[in-house]
Image (cartoon, rainbow, N blue to C red):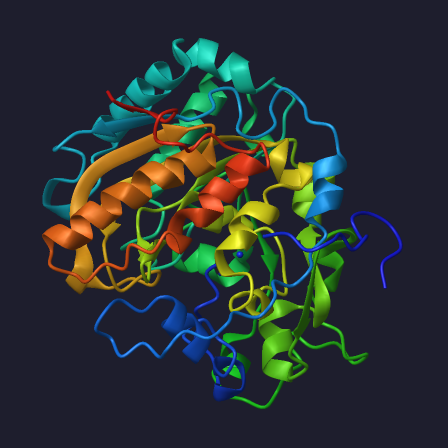
Length: 410
């Protein structure tokens, strides 16, 4: 058991990283499309079972994160509650990104968010010595994943203002997903491309019984050295012990460790999620980072689900480093998410900018609900689907109250 970092067990408090993968039945039994998940996300008329008294919320170590003093960059960031929306109908002509338009949208959004030009806005967040991690969402590669052209615009802004390419790292949790989505060294020369962990897809899908690509002779995962066992999110929920789970999650037990990339190397983080749903909730800014920065997450889907999107970002390793969030809504998806589903995708031609990821998610959640209704998709408007955002506000990490949100259409 770890003996350092965030390990104390606080009293109870009040209430899914994109783990949908090509999984075998061994993992599927506890996966996000489990009975509990579907019941929690059911809409009226979908034969939802009668509600029983919910089980007590598992204890977590959130109190330890909250004890650490904040910095000037800490969430909700330099512009609490402010969300800038930029739309241009020419951003995705015939579904193909127009980089020149996207670059203009980026400049417009940053200027409106910060009140400064691109050089001035860079200076608000970064120095030339920072190591900047760009957290992308590679799910639904090439279709609903973070657009390469949005990443290009961000990198252009950073390098134009003096940040060296070798000081920039595009990252996600799974290395193979980055490659599938086009985030390669060939596409981004001089830029770091890093996944926090390796997963053997063939073994996961049951196509081979050879686990040697991911399982060491001592029974541990090859990616164990990539995670910092002194910095972790603890929740009183056990992880399954089967090999399929270990392949995907690196560790069993009750600890979700942060990647060493975040704890040891990155000094700033830019979060680039995609505009899409997960049931009646959304899979955007806070989920992209909450389930992307730590391992051993599937165990958390049922008992803590969206609260993970608050409590993981509350730790200083994210809270004090994630200075900017840009939601890629160039192509959006209103149902069937978080995986890609062309039936429910549409050209939205929109980018959203914020330092406050919770305010960003509240604005985007409301917009997604409007879209679902316009497409005659049943919507469950139970407050639990946004309660986690209000929870973040109570913890001092966000500004999401309707009377305080500042949603600007630039």
